[in-house]
Figure 1 (tube, rainbow, N blue to C red):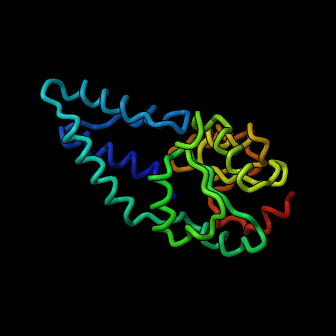
Figure 2: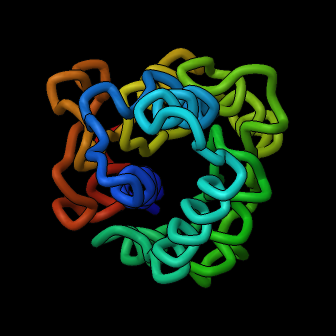
Length: 201
């Protein structure tokens, strides 16, 4: 689920409350960790004295939650899940469980995932492979028997460092040229069926 787009939109919304425009260049970090503190510091510096971070945070997150409330899987993902009979399916996310679980429940597919491994269960976010290694341990599956699906360069790096094959579907804000290490790059999940992808290996 493309929460990076809704995060960006919420920050753009908050900057516009002060008549400012967010510089999107460099907005997305090269890791899956939380950089909200740096983003609020940048906004505070731009606004100047009188900036109220508590009120700003409440307004921004309320708007983000509105956007996320109608968020669905990208095109083709539901079809892939329907084609996954006989496969064991897991989520390996750098986000905390408090973020991941409600979105999966909202999708209607929470029960389809045998394992959900989250960033607050490991010491370091992607590109560190820890969350993938945790998911593999919980599944009891060797890395060479698994395929990861990622939408960011640091996600691909984490999957490859954990020893998985990786299919990349770059998100709208990622540089497609940074996905060279992926085993397969698709513009959309609609471009291939899941059996076609798994059948490659």
